[in-house]
Image (cartoon, rainbow, N blue to C red):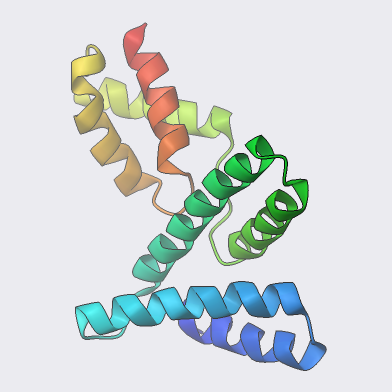
Amino acid sequence: MSLNEKITQDFKKAMKARDEIRVSTLRMLRSAMKNLQVEKGRELSDDEIQSVISSHIRKGKEAAGEFRAGGREDLAQKEENEIAICYDYLPQQLSPEEIEATLRGIITELGARGPKDTGTVMKTAMGKMAGQAQGKEVSKIAGRLLAS
C-alpha cells in the first residue's frame, strides 16, 4: 500500500471515529500533497510525500516554539499533537547518536576537513537519511563534527 493510500485510509477511519485532531492533521497533509501533485502534474512518489510530511513537521516545530514564546501553551500543544501524528507516516527517526555515527562515516568517506565542506557532507547525508532525520538537526551535528 502506498503512503498516499495509507493516509487516505487513515483519514476515513479518523472521520468515522470523530478524531478531530487526526482529521485536521491528515486533511492538512492531503491538501499539501494535492498542491504538490498539481504543481508536478503527476502522482507523487512515497519519497515526495515523506518530504511534504517532513516539511509539515519542521513548520509545526517552529510554530510550537513561537507559540510558547508568546505564552500560548494550548496552541503549542496542538502543534505537537499534529507533529506526533505526522511521525506515524515517516520511517523510524534516527537518534542523535545514530545521526552522528552516519555523519562520521560520511565525513571519512568524503575526506571532509572543515566547515567549508559542510555543503558536500549535508548533500550526501540527507540523501542517505532522507525521511529519517530533520535537516536542521543533521546540520547542527555536522557543523559540530566539522568544526572539531
